[in-house]
Length: 197
Length: 404
Image (cartoon, rainbow over all chains, first blue to last red; front, side, top):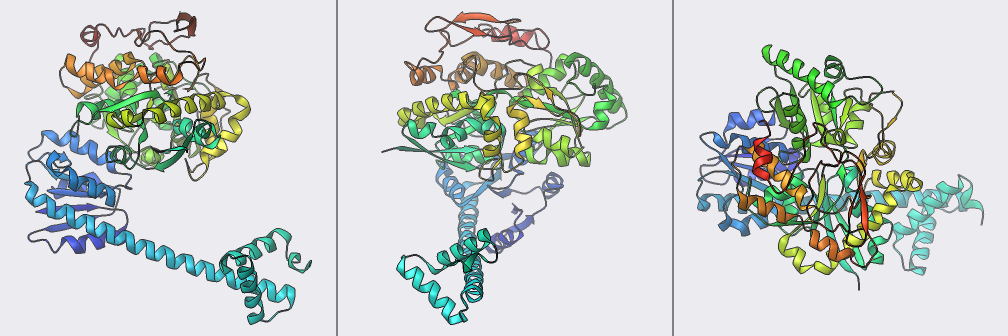
């Protein structure tokens, strides 16, 4: 059975491929390029096509499936109604599936289940990464605020940090938020803004 | 307690009414809290609607009908109680094709004259073994049907003399540039994006093909409409107020900036303004030309879902899908449009409510008064460019008179 994974995110596509390759007798091909997508699909003649919901090529692909309906292996849009629950789960996870007409539901279900698990796993990874990136950006802001305070108030680094922390505790806000406010105020008022106390 | 509604949309200018209803507080006045989900394909907008990620969606009117009839996927009944606007699309050619068909510089062409030039060019290109290729946004779109209507009436068979393919709106300019397509029918701001990049010239507005052509609708699952009926009616009232705000020239600049912001269209306010103000720049560097009613979002009860509009779309589906006419399908298609919900939402607001639910489309060559529930309302010219009109009482007769 040949499965095509259409995903412009190469990182996610490889996470999904890795999962699907555990299926018996499954051959997984990843397509990340928008250009020439239909030609590649036609050459591959996949039994199943998985494509992420955020992919701008979905309408183009559906149109292709509609016009190739007359071919010997027409691709149905989605599985039949009995798999409604599996489809709903896949849409929730952010992936849609197209399957060659006549492929037994018992063969489709494990593919969909795996794809859903992999999509969800990737989404969690992404969220962790975003959080880590956010933390990094926060740390940079705090450093910037410290430098502003050191320069404008003649503090040393621990002193500048203590000042940020004191203000944060006083107003029950996060240090990062206070730092953000310091940086913004500094930008608004120019390089000498902080000395006006 | 305000009621929440989540609405799906594609980044196009004609998603404006629900967005402005939320941003200007008209939704809040009606006790609604709106949130939006932006997507990049109609397939995903539709999936989210069908599987409950959204309660309502900015949707291509023909796609709402196709989904109800089960074209392309298992049938799921949808309802459209509000038309988000009429027209607002344009036909853009590559500069080479525009020149080859003698499209006039500095103004929109005459649909007949350009069509004749195009028929000639299409024959030559087909004989040379490389048919002209056009992009439309979706198989089930008014863009596809308007383009085909115009081509067929000009003697160009859309399925044999040229090729028509699907191209997602954000990639139309790329496709024109790479020569993948020679022309397209797409909504704004994507024609203007092609113009700005110098890869396309706007040659016609779809309003020149059908002066009052139905475009996007607000679509819901039939069962959701019933379950959330009061909220949907409140949304209809809020969107009518948003429409009044949208058409007022005093608000154009601010609304263009708002719609262009990253949360919505994520593009250039200047380009959005062109569509909103009915002033298009047809080729790069040219002066803007005014074309009244390029987009038609409010006047003449433009948002009223005429059953005859849905039936016209159904006749085009029969015409181009190669499936036979079936009265049962025609009835189902007609029932997707819900003038009863529209009327019920606006009863007592003083807004204009047509007395009938269906009308002969394209029959008005000039301004005409028609009856409303109270008094009369005025409808302007609504003709098709070939002078044909559509009588919803005789769909087979209408179809018999059309070429394929």
